[in-house]
Image (tube, rainbow, N blue to C red):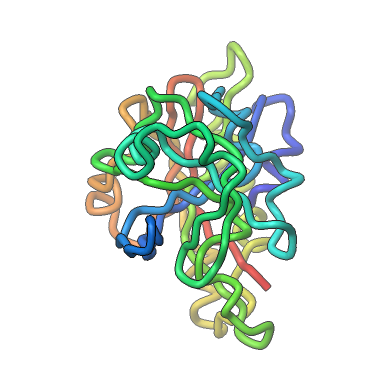
Length: 231
């Protein structure tokens, strides 16, 4: 779903995706089961998210077979490394994978979901655990997709676009391992445009049933729950 939304420059100024997972993070020899936020390489630009020191990652970093990179959240940097600026450039282990720390996120950034407290931000294609899935059984998991609307574009306009293109968007993103019944169920889902100014709220999933495809607005952004296939 990401590519066609990115191409729609008449509605969206930026498009990106994210998901959260919990993984053991090695901090000075002690493993902490922590929240890891995985974001596509264009999320920093789409959100206008800056780093306190170092740099954010980009689409060029968001590749499965490239160097593994990570950005620490400010709170985790302070609690685990006492705000040591020399941590940038060093490695941190997540599960059994070593990531190079390239930056520290803006201190105001507290995550993208209500109640979340991520420690680490890594590229979506380098999601911990994804590299252990064989090519015979590709990994699929749910993500939220954020898109920043072009100035003057209403939420109603976005909903109309989703209503008109939902079937095509879903057909193009069906998980490859789905059986015919799962495929039909996936394609018959709906895409909703809902305000998300306060962040992603899991209440929406309970309200509309799970799994749910949902588009949320964060200020001038919209958020879409979709499925990503990794090979």
